[in-house]
Image 1 (cartoon, rainbow, N blue to C red):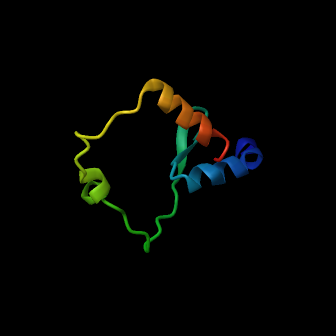
Image 2: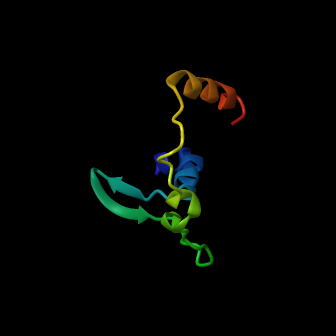
Image 3: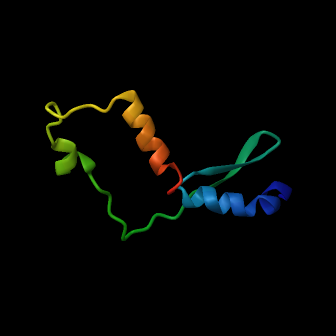
Amino acid sequence: MRDLRNRYTDLLRWLGAGEEILITQRGRTIARLIPEQDQTAQRVNWSHSPAVKRDRSAERLLTADESLALLHEAGGKW
């Protein structure tokens, strides 16, 4: 119970991320916390997305230096 009380905000964050939490007592599971399923949320099937289906075989691949520069450029923005 002490861990539940002390880590309440962590538990909420984990549940919000879709994690299932097992509550144990002396190594034996006694309860399970699962995130509430939003009935209005719809799942997206990305395999049908035009961006996923696009033929990239003719596109130029980035070099390692170009990739690194792109990562450094975007690194501070997130």
